[in-house]
Image (cartoon, rainbow, N blue to C red; front, side):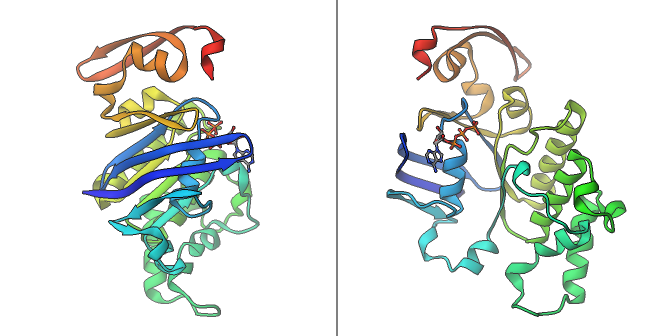
Length: 263
Ligand SMILES: Nc1ncnc2c1ncn2[C@@H]1O[C@H](COP(=O)(O)OP(=O)(O)OP(=O)(O)O)[C@@H](O)[C@H]1O
């Protein structure tokens, strides 16, 4: 089953070009989009969620062209968490999570008991209930990320997309967030798609990888099938050793290769 499919996407922004992006993102799995800075990962997420519009090509969500979705219907199907540095709302945690219910409400509609149950459920899954009355901006980075994930859960979508959900978090909080996303995927069958920089975490928590470079898709597949020293050379221009413990790849970076080849 495919949750998201892109067909021959092209986009020019400034001097950057996204070339012929055709990918199939599996439903009910965890997928990471990886690749060097500036390779077009966030741009691809934004095209999928219609925050940006491609010059050419097509996006299908659950086999239906995204352009045929009404705005509300799309917001009931996929939730997007952009990079956390972009939003520090002046809201309590409960108020923030309540925003997740917006696609189901008209202006001035009251919060129903069903909404309250869903908000409470989202807080329970993400262990954020203890902070519900605190101002969002007073939470630590890790606590903020969990509250944002709770807001996405309250949106009750089948797909959640996240742009670098672990950036700015210490290693323990990174793992905490990754474990939470994995649990959300496994327990509620929600398709998770995220941009990640940490390949080790991508290998550990994701079922499927999409690797991009210079606006192109270089390779896609299961982490243990595609992560290799060749992959690190081709995608990142670095020399690295990749060894396996069972099916789990361990990456040891050694040095950068010729910088001229980076672009
Ligand atoms: N509005 C814009 N105008 C000009 N260039 C843009 C614009 N938006 C994005 N770009 C450029 O497009 C390229 C891809 O950006 P994008 O944010 O998709 O990369 P990324 O792979 O997510 O990078 P990172 O890992 O650093 O977040 C970058 O070179 C960026 O500067």
